[in-house]
Structures are given as C-alpha cells and as structure tokens.
Amino acid sequence: MKITIEIEESRFQTFLEFIKTLDYVSVEELSPSIPQWQINETEIRLKQIQEGKMKTRSWEEAQDELFEG
Image (cartoon, rainbow, N blue to C red; front, side, top):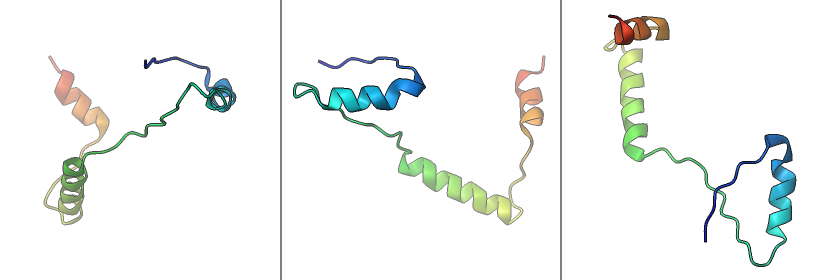
C-alpha cells in the first residue's frame, strides 16, 4: 500500500529517520526529473538568446500580454 502524507518541514528529517527503522516500511525518495527533450529545448533556446536570434522579455511584459483584456 502507498500513501501520501504531509509533514511540517522542520520535523521531516526526524520522521523520515524514524520510519526507516521500521522493518515493514520501505522509503523511496523521489527527485523530480526533467525530461531529456525539455533539457534539449532549453539548451537550444539559450543558445539562440546568446546568439541574438531570440529575444527575451520580463515576466511583467509576458504577464501583461497573457492577461490583457
């Protein structure tokens, strides 16, 4: 059985150490993974920006465009 629990960040490490001592509990720590296609696309866009082939804009400018009207 798998469950999801919420724990105060300040108590997380202590709780994790405790449940790892229980022989009937296994802990799988997951780290977010970034898909390779997204890494590749980011590298392409950064290169285009550095070469002056793509322009950037501030979040405020993007936000105005997205939410105008």
